Every structure is written in C-alpha cells, then in structure tokens.
Length: 380
Image (cartoon, rainbow, N blue to C red; front, side):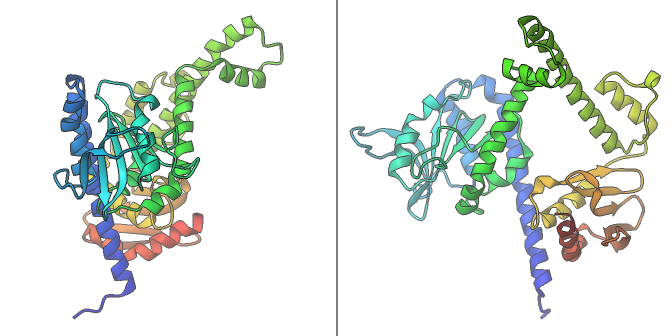
C-alpha cells in the first residue's frame, strides 16, 4: 500500500475543501436564480418560508427541515411574562439551539423592529447566531456588544439578488457539515464593520449627504461653505464620484483584457461600453477558458490556507493566465499556461524567476501546494 505523506494528505484535503466550496457556491447561485424569478410573485410569509427559507436551510445550510432534532419550526420558549411566543425556526446541534431564524414576507423590507422575538429568545437560549430574513435578504446577528444580548446591527448581510462573493465562505461556516461557531464569532466584528462601511460608501456614492459634500469641499475649496457653495458642490461631488467609479471600472476592464499603453486624448472612449468595445477591437485573441477558471479556483483554495480568499485574484492575458495577491501584478502567485497542447503551471521564486511545471490534469496542481503557499507567504 502506498504510504501517504503529509503533503499528499494536505493536498487531498485541499481538493475536497475546494470541491465542497464550489458545490456550495453552485447551490447558492441556483437558489438566487429562483429568488430572482419568483420574489415578486410571493406575497405571504408562509409562501416565503416554503419557496425560499426552507430551501435555504436545507439545500444551502444542509439541515434536514423534516427532522425535529435538527430543525424545530415554531420554536417556543417562555420568556419572562411572555408566554407561548414563537420563533419561526430553531436550528439544533447536539440537542442545543445554535441558530434562531425569524421570517418575514419576501416583498417586505427588513427592519430591526421585526426582530423582537429574536431579541428575547437570544437571551434565554444557547443560540449565538440569530437570523432575520425575508428569503431574499438574510441578516445575521450575534452578541458582539454585550454577552448573551443580540446586537442591534447584523454582522453579515447576504442579499440573494446581489451576492457578495467575499461572504460565501462565512455563510458556509454555518452549514451542517462545516459548522465552525468559533471562527464565525471571531470574524464577526470585522465582517460587521466592513459590511457596514461598504454599504455606507455605496449609499454616499448614490446620494451624497451634506456631511460627505462638506468633507470633500473643504479639501478643494478655500472659501466659506455657504449655501451657494453647498448647492454648487452637491452636483460636483456626485459627478466626481460617478466619474471615479467609471474610471476604476475601465481600468479593471483593461487589465482583464490585457490592454496596455495609453490612449491619445482625441481617441479616448467616453463610456464604459466604448472602452470595452475599443479594448476588444485591439485584443480579440484573449479568451478566458473554463479550464483556466477551474485552475484558478484550485490555486485559490490552496492559497486560502495563508490569506483570505478575496485577496487572491486573476488577470488573463495573451500568453498566460495570472493569479495574483491583492490584484497586484508585482505579487504573482502562479501562472497558468493553458493555451498550447501541453499545459504548464508557472511558479516563481524569490527573484520572480518562473519555472514551468508540465501538467496533464488540473488535479496535479495540488502536488505543488507547498510552493504556492510559500509564494503567498512571501508577499503576505
């Protein structure tokens, strides 16, 4: 019998982890498509439970909704003078309540006022995770601010109509097969504030507040911040924000298409669509293949042992498919040379000298897991 080395065991474990992550992502995407197609047609809370919430508990989180030892519908516990109040679902592990879920109709807007039962039940059960959902949006709460008292703000917000891929791994930690409460709680504070900041920045870009306008005006305008100046800069700040976003999108599109060089001002495209069209006209030979994306996911899974998955990015070019740390071409993790009959995995040493390793199957990338992790560690 062939003796398994530690690297082989780690490689197989990494492969299984990647496969589980990809399967989890596919199930989440499938449910998102269903939600997008049916949300407008479902108006009652009961219909929302049947169409969206029970499938999320079963197919995404992996709990048996028909096993009362795992999922208890209409969970009841007496809370002080409140007798017989119910929370829609309680998810159990080892006989203890771990997750409480309160449901609202899919067409309704989620508000913290809807979570009164969650607040009370959180304090009298062993649950560390509470969820308020309308089947479309999922707000996850814990007790960061005070022990055994549910926070007023969620640490994680999942919108099935606009899935933030950086949250997928965190959601997976709540699933039956990958349940990791300690890891969830330890990362909850960072998730809470990063998520809140991203939502606030997005809101300011959509409709800047007076504070936001005054903040930027004071850095470029030396006069008094009068009402006339406020009105003038309200439009200017909004216009600058939109142009900034457009320029960033254009830069990413050029990078993804492998375009280099500077356009002449007279020939510069004026919209994102024109940038895409112009870039494609200049470079139609770049085609990102499914095989390259699968190879990228394998390298990403290996690198996740050292850094968070969202830090591993990719850029495709004519000659190779680059996998980078922090979307920085000065931090190459690996290169995939899949354009010829013979495929190669390119790995770089301390001096960024590349060595190409021939591979016939994508699984062979796992054999180079130690070098990939070492490459990430050099930059991280």
